[in-house]
Image 1: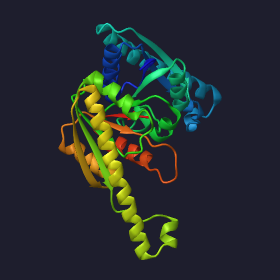
Image 2: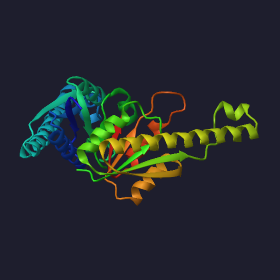
Image 3: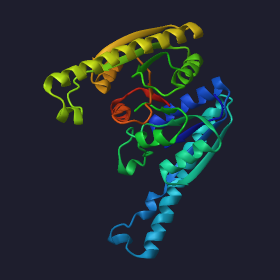
Image 4: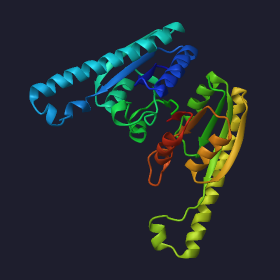
Length: 152
Length: 147
């Protein structure tokens, strides 16, 4: 196998378990490791209820919300980097914003990826839990490398 | 890492499936069980339902089962060859019924920590995507999809 091992994390227990596998695989196969947290741009289409019906209120809410999400993503990635570094594995971390599936596919293309590691999308409750959402059937048609899904 | 792996195969895996699976297996050196589910309960075949008489339909279904048997032999031989080249051992299991249900049942009876599935090339009637989605929803172990 050639190319990076790519972990797309959402900070869920399933992503934590998948992350451990990613580290072990990178260690045993001597492959570079990269971890990405995706902020889905779908939140930008949120119109809100009456309480955010003015443009300024809505923008303030979005900024507050994005700051919160970004801070959470940084914490999750920093924790993963620490786990990898403890095992002597260097890891490149990155926060990406966009459509989740599209970003995942793009990340697997450049650089070349030998294994894509994801959490189980059914591992967290919908809505407020903000877990990674993707359709495995659609994703597996677009991604060329093997896909590893963490336990539920 | 993974000590007890279940590889569920349908016989129409993409080219390179065995190679990629063996690379993964060589890293983890686990106990490998290969499961093939012969799909039963084949009652609906689209146009065949409309065009064929009862007897012809039964003959057609028997023909499908014969193909499944042949596939099973081919899969077994491929894994036997793989085991000989890699020096590993594998257990071979055959079940009959609905693939997702049978795979889940096998996962529940064995102490597996990873399920490996292949994908089918695009063609009419292929249902592997349904198996993947169903697995994802009900699975408690990790899942590796090899294309």
